[in-house]
Length: 102
Image 1 (cartoon, rainbow, N blue to C red):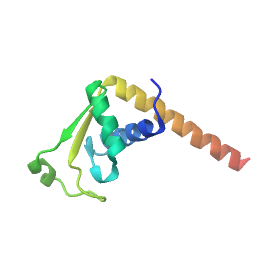
Image 2: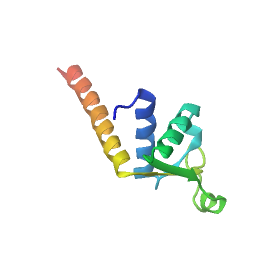
Image 3: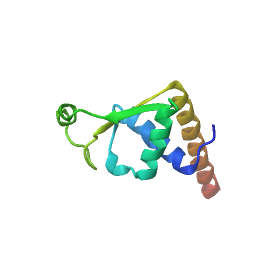
């Protein structure tokens, strides 16, 4: 599965939320295109997401950048895609560093 730039960006943002923030998302960091992609992926059963209950949101302190009012969960396929795109992004950055240091 090949992703567009927008799709790859939202996938990697969601992967960061999964790893660093218990799967909680800050909608403030997203745009309409992101939500449209996520809705499509939910229908395709690549991810699942929804809004957190108010009691759950207020249980944790508000993060820098605003409340994390939504949650996301990945399927195994989403994890595989995220790994591939994260690795490709890292290799691109490393190649750039090598060029600068030579």
